[in-house]
Image (tube, rainbow, N blue to C red; front, side, top):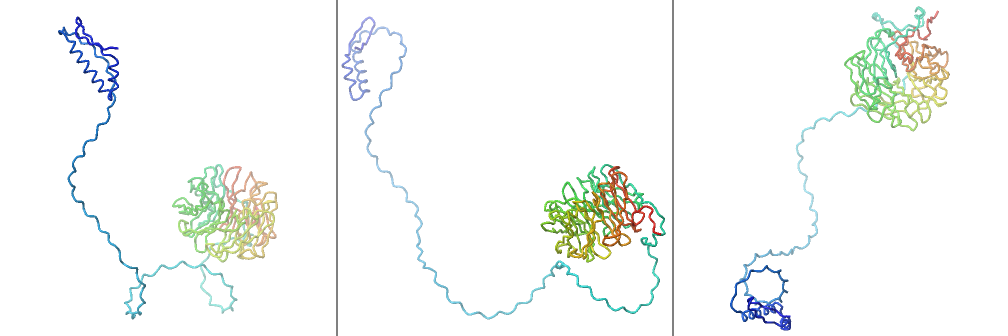
Length: 540
C-alpha cells in the first residue's frame, strides 16, 4: 500500500511510503505521535516534489470527520507549592468547673417548741346559709283514746242557710220519675277516645278526650249539668299525635288540669287550663321525657295542692309516680319508679288515701295479678311493700280506684281470662289484709273501660263497657264492698255504645257518664235520673 501526493495535474511527482514504514510508526508508544510523524513526512515529500505552481483547483467538499484519538497518559505531578500564611487565632472555649460539693448531711434534732402566740381578734360573722330541704314526714301515730265529753256550750246564733244538698233517700221519694238524659257533646270520625270527666267549680261537667282522626286533645265544657247545652269544644293540643290516656282533675285555682300522652315524642304532658272551659290562657308542660310514657295516666291533687300522676314507663316496664313541683307541672318535677319484677304498671289508677298519701292500683303482667302500692310520703319516695290483692285468673285490667266512705280503697277491674267485672274492697289502707273480692258481672266480655266513684248515698257506683253486647252498663253497689244487693242497669244499647266510659257525680248527687258512640262517631254524656240509673225509678 502506498500514499500519493499530487502537486500538479500535468507534472506528477509521486513518492511512495511503504506500509511497513507506517506500521512501524504505529507501533510507537503514542499513536497520536505516530500520526504527527506521518503528517510531517507527507509535508516533506510534498515540498520535495513541488514544481511550478499551477492554477489552484476548486476546493473539494469537506470530508467526514475522523474518529477521536485515544486519550493520552496522565502527566507527572507538579511540584508542591509554598505553604500558606497562618490563620487567625480562634476564640477560647469554656472552662469546665468540677463540682467538689459533698453529699447533704443528716438533719439536726428538732428544737424545743416555742411559746404560744397571742390570740388574734375575732373575724366577722359569715352569712347565714340557706335552709335545708324539709325532711320526710314521719309515720302517723296511733289514734289516742276518746276524751271525756265536755259540758254543753251556750247555743250559738243561727247560721246562714246552706246550699241545697244532694237528694237523700227521703227526698228522692218526692222527685218525679224521669228517663236518663242522653246528649251528644261532639261528633266526628273517631271522636271520644280515652275520655275523662270532672265536675267544674261552676257545677258543669268538663270532659277531656282524644280526637283520634285528627290526633288532637280536645276539651268540652257543658253549659248545663246534663250537657244538653255545650258551651265550648276546644282543641287544646294539636302538636303531633297527642291526647292518649287522658285524665282530668280540677286544680287548686279552680281550673281543669289534664294529664295525657304525646304519642309522637312519647312524653307525659300536663295541660293547665286558663279558665273553666279551657278556651284561653292554657299552658302545656312536658312533665316527664325520661323513657317512654304508656297510654294510661291517672291524676289527682295531693295534700300539698300539687298534681300527682301515675303512669307506665313503656321501656322499663315499671309503674311511675310523678309529683309536680308546681301547680302546672312546669318545674321541679320528681318521679319514682315502683320497681318490682312483676310491677309492670299496666292500666294504673291513682287515689289519695285518708293519710294524704298516694295509692296506685295496676295490672302486674309479669305475675298476672291486681297489685296495690301505698306511698308513705306525698312524693312516693317512701312506699309500702307492693301488695297482691287478687291473683285468681288474670286480674287487674282496666283498673279504676276510689276511696270509700270508711277511708279504705275500692278497686273495680276486669279479670282477663273470663272477662268478668270484679271489685276488691281493701281491709286496710295498704290492702295488706281483710280484702274482699267479688265478681259483679260475669258476662262473656264485660268489664272494659271501667270508671268508679262513690255515690251520694256513700256506696260505690261503676260504669263500664259490655264488649259482647256493645252496651253501656252501670252498677250501683248494695253495700260498701259490693258483696250484696248490687243493681246492674243497661244505660244505652242503641248501636255500638259505651266504650271509653268516664264517671263523675254531679252537685245534685246524680251520676254523669261520658262515653263513645262508635256507630254514630259521637261523644255522648248521660245524666242519670237517679242513683241506680234505672229509668223512671221511684222509691215509694
